[in-house]
Image (cartoon, rainbow, N blue to C red; front, side):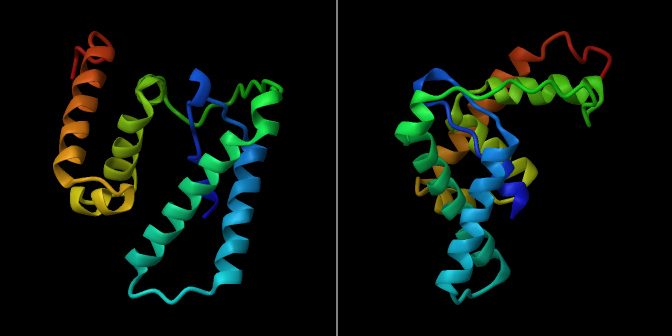
Length: 151
């Protein structure tokens, strides 16, 4: 669940804030919701989808809060990046995508969900998910053109 909290990004107001501590707080709140609700799940996939949906909703609430709108976080420089230079270029390109494309890219490639499952999680038609994936791939191809000519 900690990993899901770290994925909490939102670009309301045109600004993305990535703060490890805020992500940990959100992950903790999602865990508390999980413990308090004691939901019964049909499968592990159902549980994972529930955790994702609750995390997404909590992130949205967090970024809409008055506190978040009126404060700015301290910038942390992390010199030891866990990515290779090639991976860093891809991650940065994905992070520059609009939110709707980042979501489907993350759920499809990182979490391994099928497009039908993504449609259910994001509450949108499957064809919309397929369109967003295609557009995201096209944007990434354009953004990374020249980065991987040797591939």
